[in-house]
Length: 147
Image (cartoon, rainbow, N blue to C red; front, side, top):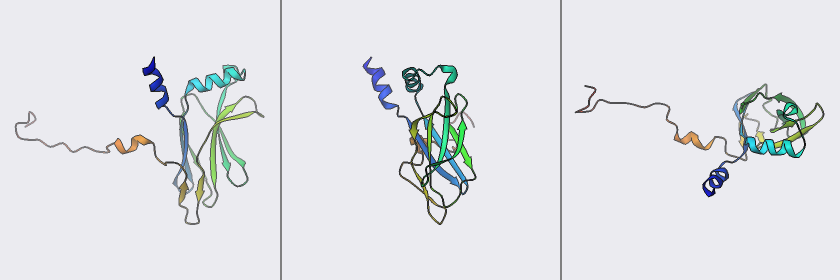
């Protein structure tokens, strides 16, 4: 039981946004299904009415720029057509009807300066990226079985 609790505490929900190239904003997230089910049960939202939604906001005006209804299992999204001198943030939430949106996660702010470079208040890459090798070099050594 303590082992399971330790495992669950290591999982952290997050929503991270970053500029990939000028005009493209990449968003990825992790949200535990148990938390979503709990919130749906608490607010009496039947599973058939549960719609996971991603919203892109313009930071200064807090205006919704784009809204995406997500399919089951999707954990990243690419927004295209991002203005180079605007500031943004993204929210992941539950949409029950056309009028009701309940945010669950909010991303870091994407603040773009005049040189189209982005600044962020959270890490821009997932923690596992430093442990991935893009290539491996294999060499036949003496006494190797592959001579």
